[in-house]
Amino acid sequence: MRWFRLYCDMIEDPKVGTLSDSEFRLWVEILCLAGLAGNGGDTGLTVSETEWKLRRNVSETLQKLIRNGLVTFQEHSMGKQTIYVPKWNVRQYQSDSSTRRVQKYRSKKA
Image (cartoon, rainbow, N blue to C red):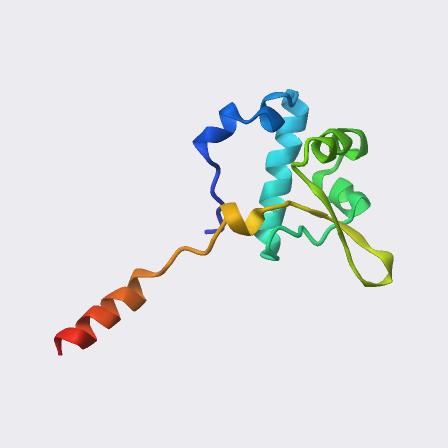
């Protein structure tokens, strides 16, 4: 199961609090796309590819997310710009696995 962290303190964040319902929905959908891509916040999708994936026009709504600093663009070779979630790796850090800790603990006991 693929998932990402959504923090409770976002309700106090003015960047998020000023979003309309449709803007908030698009932001969450972009978070989902970034999580599915697994590229450290880069959705790997251009605006037109995102519109196709979400089956609607997002250009205008996306501009508010950009102004609020919730998304930006990642520049790729040959001029391709993909939608990117800044600070993804800060908020969506890799959880440690208990498997390694348990193995280390057991090896010390042996």
